[in-house]
Image (cartoon, rainbow, N blue to C red; front, side):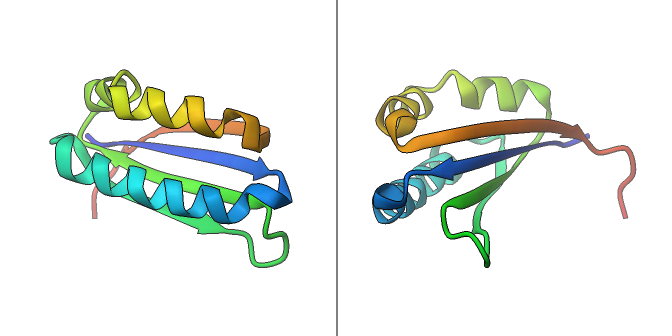
Length: 98
């Protein structure tokens, strides 16, 4: 069964555009080089432009673990950590397929 990871970030207002450009690049990288990354989407809150949610789907828990240990993930974290004021994340396991 697939594994879904949602990450919720609040950014400093002055970092929004840099983050959007950087997360687009990161999502493309994940989808092209990680066999286990099935989907990677980023959403921005309609009412609060500093709030973002990443919705990531991995083939299984192992693929998610591989993702979090890739050089491109570690590089992203190093680049954006100073832009982020709040961070929450959840890991979801699919229990039914339709």
